[in-house]
Image (cartoon, rainbow, N blue to C red; front, side, top):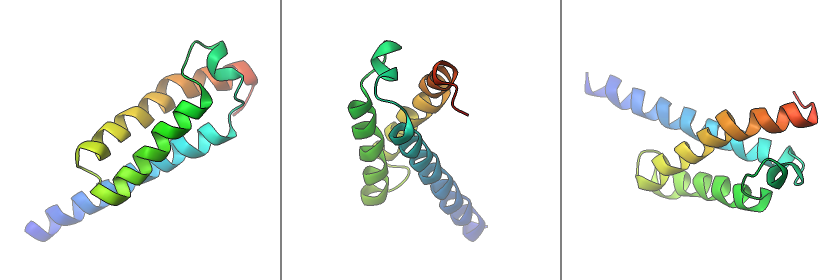
Length: 92
């Protein structure tokens, strides 16, 4: 039983890291002009947030304070900012 719980935590940590890496990759590809146009933080701030999230995940773990806050921040980008940028620029 304990081994299966540990496996679930390990796999969910990898999924969390994947979401953070996806957000960072998406931010790097997005045009910098789109962020202020949508009244969002600048591209550099989003890069710092997502890069800090990935580094916090790697240094302190997926489910520590920095891991969870970073996951939330990256999820906000993917759920809110990304669709608006894609709609505005025609990206898929």
